[in-house]
Image 1 (cartoon, rainbow, N blue to C red):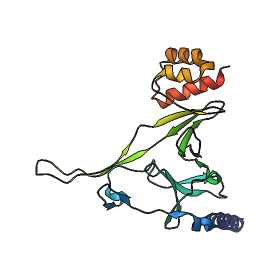
Image 2: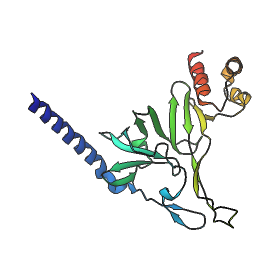
Image 3: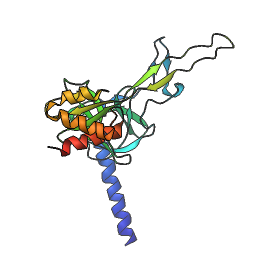
Image 4: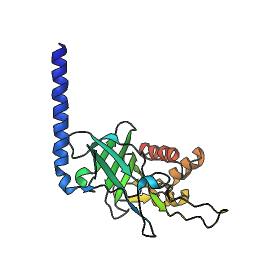
Length: 225
């Protein structure tokens, strides 16, 4: 019996590795990740030389990618807006394509989708809720240049990655609506639910910048007639 389980596990591993190898056979069309950031001064810096992080999660997490037949070690770069894939010791960038448009991370229960619409900048967005009204979040990181020490009283400033505040979008059957800070603007964007939105936000003290509050609002919009 032990021999049977050992054989079964070996075959499963071989099939999994073979499926992953088939996926990476397309790597000739994938760009290889380059550990370099070009500063405004023309310097070429490694990611490790910059304070902060360009990644939602720095380590690679096993993810299910649409168009791939097996799970792949994956991470999302919020600075370059690219999905990076680990294959042995090599890191590749997943092409931004509808073929690989959906990436699911089971461990963190997050879903990243590639969206290409005239209403919003093309790129990767986190899918927070789906339904007649869906909620998406755009995350972005910017590079901030450092500065050399002017004198002994003014220390040098290290270059750093700075995470910007996320931007939220509500998707309907026909458009994407950027979530404003003002609830009146949001209600105006959905005239068929204007009164209901205003009432719900007021009663539940919803803040347009709080993700959990927005999820409550989306659930309400999907559940109400």
